[in-house]
Amino acid sequence: MIRSVVVGVGSELPQNIMTNNDLAKFVDTSDEWITERTGIRARHIAGEGETTKTLAVAAARQALSNAGLSIEDVDLIILATSTPDHTFPATATEVQAELGITKGAAFDLQAVCSGFVYALTTADALLKAGQATCALVIGSETFSRILDWSDRATCVLFGDGAGAFVLQAQKGGNAGILGSKLRSDGRHCMKLYVDGGPSTTRTVGHLRMEGREVFKHAVVNMAENMLEVTTAAGIAMADIDWFVPHQANKRILDSTASKLGVAREKFIITLDHHGNTSAASIPLAFNHGLQNGLIKRGQLVLMEAMGGGFTWGGVLLRF
Ligand code: UT7
Image 1 (cartoon, helix red, strand yellow):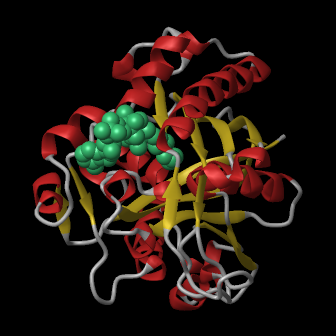
Image 2: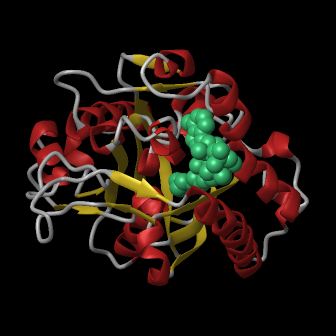
């Protein structure tokens, strides 16, 4: 049986850090409000010359080095992003060129904050189908470029960054992706959206969100999906070593943990320093867990996300 094994992990954050107090200098908000309502204290913001591509390339290089592999080994790149460098070509192809990879295929995948679990599931399917043998799965975002910096309800929530996994098709062994489940419900597509696009306004647009509605659905959908994924794999929730959820709001994660009856200490949290980095948040949090000696080889990790569309999904991994 072929399994998609995570053999390398990497991440990258822009140099520039913006704290809640920095924000309060130009938006009607406070460190107290943001910390209490979201758990976010700071976020990284891309500077001049830093783009979704440059962050993705840095994260991918680190993941390949962590895997002990080279560009020659990679024959698939899937880049989850909602903030591509250009409307087209896919930023994944720009990353492919920058890395010097000339074989296989590269494409972008757009499922907003659920992008990374969608990309992992897609890569897993392509590896199992024999379409590729080694995939770079990247989540990279520059949401700071689509924020309305005068809208305090949204601009305080997001940040920029990138994270990457190297997935290798391996036979035998018990490591790898054990199961996943993707969902969407387009009836809610205008509850979290960008009010521009090439075919409508011919502009890039700004992020708009009905925060409370998203919050409500996030807790219910994520908890249900996590149960579905673990049950299908025959794994008890109590046996999961680490939960690496999408990092949107600490209160969403606390409510999800309560709903499932799992210890909050098993949730890897990075939103305090990163804010919500959309498709990049799961690999960034995963790498944080790895670098800090929390996540170890052989452990069971459940990754879970919910975002615009609405889209949501989970991936169960034996690391
Ligand atoms: O990645 C997936 C997508 N995103 C999410 O999952 C986000 C989901 N939603 C949330 O995290 C929360 O709904 C928010 C953090 C966005 C908002 O928290 P909330 O507790 O739902 O607040 P609210 O929107 O109901 O607003 C409460 C009050 C309002 O004032 P009034 O009407 O009660 O006087 C807002 O105007 O807080 C006000 N407010 C702020 N005050 C200071 C909203 N944003 C801010 C702000 N600073 N930044």
